[in-house]
Image 1 (cartoon, rainbow, N blue to C red):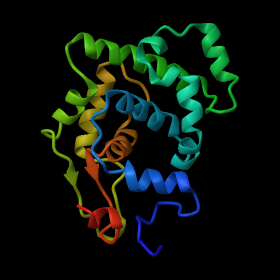
Image 2: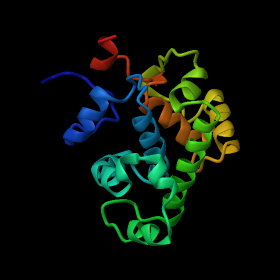
Image 3: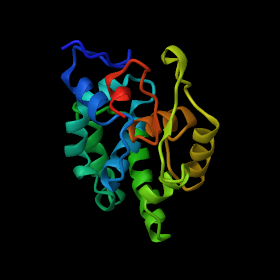
Image 4: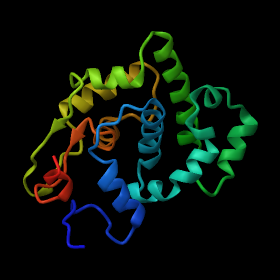
Length: 187
């Protein structure tokens, strides 16, 4: 197959190809997936996305299928289990962030909001389609700055502007596929 993909996609990793072709830049409105991706992008901080993607199934098991209500109730024993789990990134701050994010998400819902409505409201429900020359994507934008700041005020953790921009790409709020990429040509 000679289809051209974005230059960042590792063609040797089937998970990466599937992620690139079927998720990255594709609008997502599923609450569980939106919550999962927010936490996975935070877990990725300082690491490669490929590392997290390869551990994604382990994360789903370890974090109860990303059930925010369960995660919000995690106690010290559960945190200890997570920190001993070699299938995820065993970083105390990142585990604590997932718990804080579950609680912040539940507060958002208590306000009558969903992640879907909240996030997509920043772009009027329509993805931003960029055309960066030579795949020179920014690490952050004014919009990711604004969303990052608002998420932080709401109690979410590991939501700096760079993480939020990657999240926006991952959930399709932003479509940054390369000009020659087969996914861009499918639009």
